[in-house]
Picture 1 (cartoon, rainbow, N blue to C red):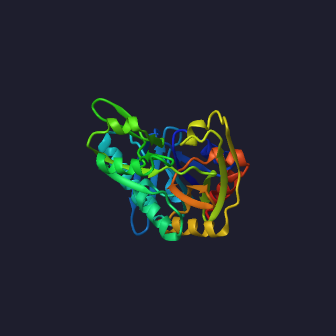
Picture 2 (picture 1 turned 90 degrees about the vertical axis):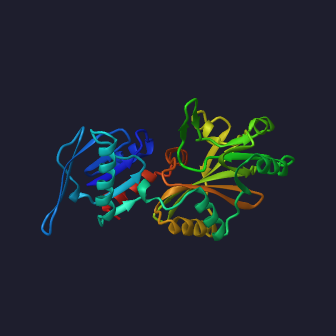
Picture 3 (picture 1 turned 180 degrees about the vertical axis):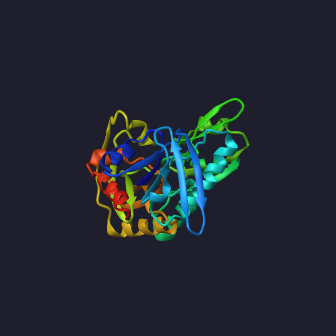
Length: 308
């Protein structure tokens, strides 16, 4: 049996399931479960759960697990949700079966960790400033005013933030303009800023157990974040790309440094240099997979079925 953690909506997960010719169970973000029993002794190991669709699922039968987002929700309150997460993680993380990806509780890195490790491995990185001080931001802005300007992106992987007055979406990268700078208070929440690099093309890399699937993305409108155009695909071209072996070796070392066997990486190619941007442990796969006819779902389904 295969266990799949996923977001509620994920086309790539659906594609993998279509190729998965074996018993499976899927935990999505809003699916509720019930722990029927966890029983352990010197003679017995048993962990039974019930879902909205299945009863008496025995997790001792698990052969492989794919962590790709998602989580657990009980039928109780927040306290019981937390208990479920702790108990389930304690069981699954020690279970000696094939695991692809990592649970959120296992993440051993953040955006700065990964960028500095990539630099250590030999990648170029964008000039980066992390500050909450307007004067330091202004100096950084002035440094690149006559070049390509600067951008801002989120530090954490949380997409949304709310306060008493507003909801904020941190999903997309955006430029820092003079108008924004004028409105910024003297002190503000710690934020990440980078020089803007005008790329010849961007590269999305899918990494599965040491195997690389790479695509170059040509953004003919030169927008800062091409993800805003993935629905229309207007002036956007995505084609397969063969990474040089030296770049694959450096990326492989970055993934292994953080004990990751699944995820995606974003690079830029500019002026004959490869720039490392970030790693996403549950990054978007389907748009690359579909555009390039990689059929990654078949490879991943086979790994999960075989447990290796």
